[in-house]
Structure formats: structure tokens, C-alpha cells
Image (cartoon, rainbow, N blue to C red):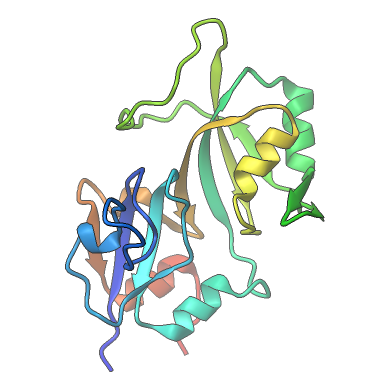
Length: 197
């Protein structure tokens, strides 16, 4: 089997799947003519943006999705409000969140304020003139359902916009201006710092 590897900058409003649940949903199939056996490694919510890896290499999929491997993911998050140092420390410590009705103790994350140069979202985020917003970078090894949004809300700062910037050593910069880019498997394994054998 010939393995294929793609990097994708998923836009807002696109499902991380190929199946169209209702006629108005946009899916990955609307972005590129991918081979039939290629699938997304992990997901981003419809209202999230950023880096996805797509492949038919099941070994790579297992290395990136199974919790035992714990690779880093970096998210750029625009939150409502202006968190102070104590708020960022609470977020970095890993707040308790609820997932499917159960309490989950998040693992610690790396948090820093950033000022990213990102294009405006279409549609734009809601803006409240009396409330500031702040961009944060969160680097974490967990990937629970809507975890970044739940963690930020748990410390009092709702998410306005969420972008996955990096998966291990692969960043959105590697996609460049193209929405989809096919890459070599050797380059991808090396950049992810994964063994090839």
C-alpha cells in the first residue's frame, strides 16, 4: 500500500470528517479530492480551526491518537476577558472539568500570552466593546472532547476562537498559504520526532 500524508488548515465551520450529516454541512471532502482510504488523525470541532493531519498510515494514526504516546499539541485561543497571572497559573495547573457528566482532572499545561498574526475569521467572532479579549497559547498532551474550551471556561474565560497551531513539531506554518498540502512520510515522521521502524 502506498501511504499518503496531508496537512490541512481546517477552516471554521467544517466538520473533521467526510460524511455529510445534513446537506448544509461542509466536510473535509469539500476542501480537497482526498484518496478514499485517507482519514483525519483526530478531530477539531466544527467551530475550531487549524492543523489536521490526514493519512492512510494506521501506524501513524495510532502513534498520534493513543493516550500512551502523549504527544504535545499547541492551541492558540482567543478568550473573552483579560486573565491575570493567577488566572493563568490556575489554567496551567489543569483545572477540573466535566466531560459527559463526570469530573476530569486535567493534566498541567503550558500557558503563555501571545499576539499571533492570524487572518480574521469568517464569520467574525462576536465582539463586546466593554470587554477585552486575550490570545493565549496552550500546549498540552491530553485531547479530551472540547477540553481547551472547558478548561478556559473553568477558570472564567470563555473561548471566542480556537486554532490548533501545532501537533508535536508540525505547525500550521508547514501548510503555508495552501489550505491542503501533501507531504512526504519521512519528513512527517522526522518532524513529529517519531521512529519510522
